Length: 352
Image 1 (spheres, rainbow, N blue to C red):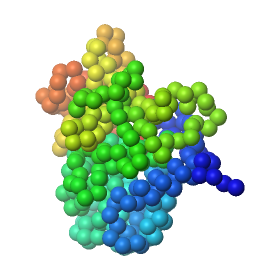
Image 2 (cartoon, rainbow, N blue to C red):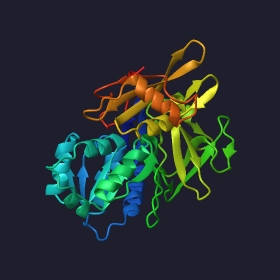
Image 3 (spheres, one colour):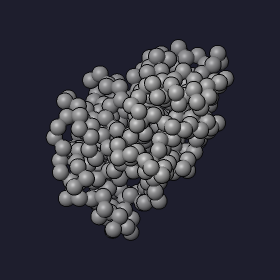
Image 4 (cartoon, one colour):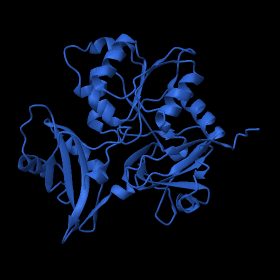
């Protein structure tokens, strides 16, 4: 007899900062998270939405939000085996897609693939919900997507270890750009210091800790790894965030990605967001590289827009004018592409 606490799936973490581990998720984890997520999107009637599924279904985002959540609402699922921006835009037109979910690089890809062959107005007229997760969405992409498709992308947050959804911009409330929203039903979220002390002050950066029905059973055959992240019933995520006075959370960065330059903390996401406001920058990834005197130095890897001619010296000089002196990248390397996982997350360890 299968019980609610039996293992339903073992999902391996994406491994963008280390070796993947298998998160054991129970039937209760999966069912409750799928039902909770499905209710967040305000479907007018059962079966109303048509999803474009470009996320891999072996990953928790696609499996819970679209496969399980979509089935729970009786939705139509249009499958695209591997994300391709032009193919995705074509299906959004031909299949009257109302629901799109993706990671930030997918939204970046859709915007970059727009040309005269795409009827953006037709897509925008049908598109009701746009959901982003997996990693933080650059504010510039949020702004441009809303401008082109007339839909505010709603960001959520979660991990394979949390089935995955833990927070989302609440239904019926105006989304706050750049925010991952508030804890969903049945889930508690708090910010903590490295020693586990709870942070109560607004706009103070701390590590996200999560407790609730959605938290995994543990890592498969990895009791030591499980003990490393589970503290007094709370899952320590390794992600840094702040919380505003309204209770909305904002991702700052991965703790492991933070750069310490000359004793000062530099959050790569903040630098990336600034770089992407440059008119000739399409996508940016920022990492810390070893430095003799500073410990680490800030380096950016940049994909330029088609036809862009901006040089490294010009972009460094521009960045210097936009941010604090210890934050701007001292070196920039231009790339035609950036290494990504099968789910579209940039793998920064392969850039160093």
